[in-house]
Image (cartoon, rainbow, N blue to C red; front, side, top):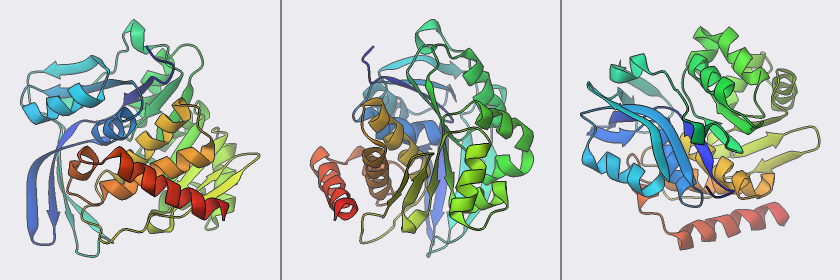
Length: 297
């Protein structure tokens, strides 16, 4: 296991995405998938998840390429978790078409010995109860990075607060930060969130970039300019995978924010994971250099 290895726990799904009048069925998706591709470009990724025996071969190929260890990827009889969403042409609103948990309904993440001692753990966007089960199995005081969403804030707040009390870094978008803290000003929201447990908070602002807060830093990063958003699905998960993989490589918080932002900018340029899968190191480096120049200028 290399020093930059990390553990990713989240959902693996088959997505149906409608964008305007276009429909795309059975796309390989889920928070684990996007985060693993983003992080697996530079780090050894160990994944924890569950899929059904209907999971397609091209999905298996993705994890064969980007995950160094799949010991705790459960493959069981039944249907893989599936989700459907519809975007309007301006992407301001997303309507959920359906959610079918399938085998994910019985998911109980149990870590094998090799996965209990990672230095970095990314708890991607899943039920806080599952996130907490993973945290309690981790040994060696790893850096715990947590992502969440409005659904868990609204329906499982107490469990989410327990997770936050055990976490080191929280990734959350702007509207969710306000929802969780009742603070309309980002600086106030960040201070309140830090008071809930995580010493570092990253507030994702979509087309306005991201801001990282901790006791000693306030780092604001803009976005990489792209010609067109094709599909925003998975951008937040991609951001998380890019962010934690940079930290696992010993990068600074600024560098981690830049890498996360760059990979998210690539993600939204294709449907599902297609743009991430075809991203070149040259393109990633070019975008990182652009954003670094914006920060240092």
